[in-house]
Length: 330
Image 1 (cartoon, helix red, strand yellow):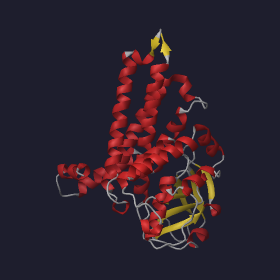
Image 2 (tube, rainbow, N blue to C red):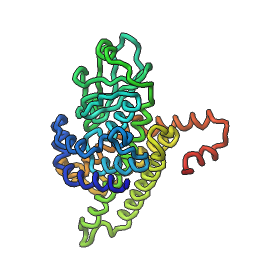
Image 3 (tube, one colour):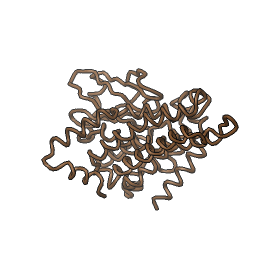
């Protein structure tokens, strides 16, 4: 049953999320054609229970969909919207917004301006922000916008009056951890596509009368690419187990740390193997590698989550081997 969702999303993105469409949305983030199609087929509600019109997919099935978003460099916050709608529904919110929802988190005091960095921010209608007193849904139209990071990322700021006027909708949730998991899954899919594109290029590009993929140095770099892509996919998939409401903080941290490490090496090797053409705007490789760098930074890069894991290990009385079993036993 779950494979039907994966195939359906693959077919939709293959047909409707071409590189030209990705470029169009990056140039015009408020373009709603692709978003309307995604919502019309129910992909924004995959985590909602069936009684609410959703699909109630477990995380292991959702992972395949999020990886597809990365594979096609989807420039819309579909995974974030899916999680936000699930959180809001679980909190009893009945009138869920139909547009894209970004995720943000901040520590702010009464009377202070609220600023958050949001992945795919220009495409959002609302941002679900985790604050000290809970979750608030803030409209983008009342925010001040500043370009931040790469590709479609934004720094959004709301005045104290604007954010305080929005009610607390749900208890506080660690949305940084959620974003780390979603970014890891999307990075996994994007890196798989980058590897496949690089392998195809190495088998087609001729030098000295034969494909460059025949040269030992190129083969060595391709093997490193394959190793990093597989390790990242395994870490991200291990973190996506069970129900969305029972997310494992340790597994999510490992997933983001490992995929972020791999993303840097994969993009470097892929661009190195492509040469100058890989850096051109017309070549599609940069559509994914730019997003890889953006996803790597959107919830804290690998050093942040490595420190998180190290502190978790120190705080636990059990042996480190027990923690390893917790991370890998399914």
